Amino acid sequence: MIDRLLIAATRFLVGGHARWQGCAPEARQRIYFANHASHLDTLILWAALPKALRRVTHPVAAQDYWGRGPLRRFVALRVLNAVLVDRTARHDPLAPLRAALARGHSLILFPEGTRGSGAEPGRFKPGLHALATAFPETELVPVRLANLARAYPKGAILPAPIACLAAFGAPIARIPGETRHAFLERARRSVCALGDPA
Amino acid sequence: MTQTMIVLFGGITALLALASLAGFLLARRAPSETVANLNARIKAWWIMVAVFAVAFAVGRELTIALFALTSFYCLREFLSITPTRPEDHRALVAAFYLVIPLQYWLIWDQWQTLFAILIPVWAFLALPVLAVIKGETEDFLPRTARIQWALMLCVFCISHAPALQILSIPGFEGRNLLLLFFLITVVQLSDVLQYVFGKLLGKRPVAPRVSPAKTWEGLILGGLTAAAVGAGLWWITPFTPWQAALMALAIVVAGFFGGLVLSAVKRSLGAKDWGTMIEGHGGALDRMDSVCFAAPVFYHLTNYFFAS
Figure 1 (tube, one colour):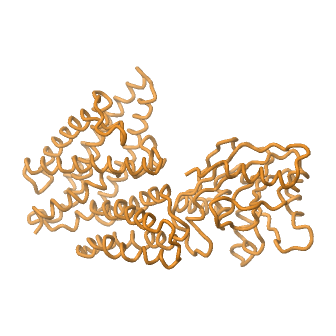
Figure 2 (cartoon, chains in turn brown, orange):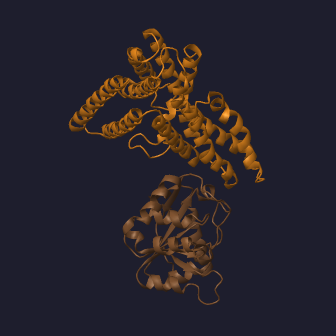
Figure 3 (cartoon, one colour):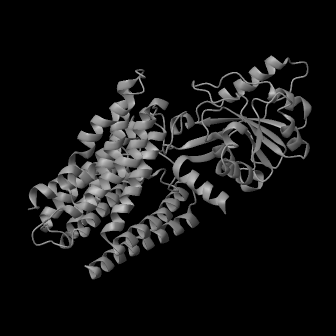
């Protein structure tokens, strides 16, 4: 019920339609990784997935934003099905993500870690590499979110009704012997390569 | 009034039924991509006419709300493919959440003078102020111009259609909704007939680089037929048959140029359609482009020559 309302509101205000360019919405175990420009990113990517996939896909959200306040927390955990990570944790912050993958579920990840401000995504944090190595069977699907920085930039209170798009690319391969740095850069470029799908 | 509406919408229903039948027969005899698109368009027309009929039946308030929603969708389509910057966010929020409701509230309130200057004067001055506070000078002029153009076309121009209800025409009191019907019927029929004649007989494109589908044959035959239908509708207007024909012709010409100008805008932004909202047609703005130009022209011609 709440998820339907949230999707209706998302569609009305910011669209959030999916464009499956390099792969189909199939029930495989995947790590979707996308550029991060806005707090709406999580919502848009979640709303772009078909219902059957939403049930087994967990957006990875920052504890310090989505965990704050009972309403946000409720939406993050109960509606979006999110896994919250503590960005300041000393101990292993990836543990809850590994647990979700170990159950055979998929993840939505924003490897920049924080919202970028430029047109192109910033450097990727190593978490994606660690998960990709630990779970070699998962597909690594790049996603490019377009228009979000305009619809809901940093510091904004209301989202402007600009249609946002989620373009899903072809899964990137794992190359044996590739360094972590090279892998992360290749992953970042695969997101850039999806262009601005406006 | 109610009886007139029943006759008018009955006529449109008959026309659509005929179109659906023709589309069905075409699809059986010679199925092609064009025919499939034609049938998608006809199907979308049924929905659009139904929405319009409900709004008309309920009355003034709902037609105003319907056009406000149309402006909202058109503006969203326009600004979604127009490059602005995150620094324009406040101006965009103001355009969507303040200017649209205010413009249509002014129509409801019949505040004719402020309705005419809200966007060309007040929004024109206020929106760049909201953007300049952010201090980003890159592309400032193009960004400001884009937002203003978007508002003028999608909100200011389109709002002139429901604003026909504020005109006070001696001897025509209480029937202004029929003027809106006249405008929308002529402008949309002109689009449809230009498309049909263009597909059947079109050879010479008017502006091949802007819109290859618009041909002289389609424009002249479709436009004249639509003007003739407009003349035939004189009895629902305050016009004589000849005046109705000239008004319809003005609507046709303005609508044609509206389509042409918005095609050029679309192309300069690198898009083929404004959106995907209406199956077969593209976006809402693909259906409203001719209304953008025809509505203010018809509004002001009627105001100048017929209103008190």
